[in-house]
Image (cartoon, rainbow, N blue to C red):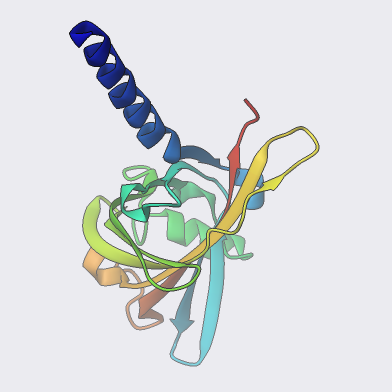
Length: 194
């Protein structure tokens, strides 16, 4: 009888642990349907917008307890695109991103919090130009999951933050380019069918 109780208790504990792990789901960023965008003032009179064409990453998401969630994004700095080749080459150079020396921009979350209906606040380390600073992403989403014809699940989210580029050592063309940069990550997340 005692042995039977012990086995039952072990089974209950095992089921509880399995359920806890099952609530946190792993998703991959779909690069074809995601974008890392930025906006910065030019000479104080207009806003120049651009994006990085190549990004990847993973999101662990727990809808019941968002504090167990995590975000890890990698952006290829050399994929910068502002629709002007000469400007893009300058951005890739040592004047700005110095992509030969610092090929990636990364964001790794440290804390995820609920911030109202359908919103999250994600605090993490942003590394640009070899410099790491803590930033907060204000996130809309994630959306409800949608199943595609192949059975894969998709959901989306959008995160925004503002940084001072000089804090990251990106200090080229100081008189022409504003210091404050708005960053937006629009991501589609995919979880393959089991």
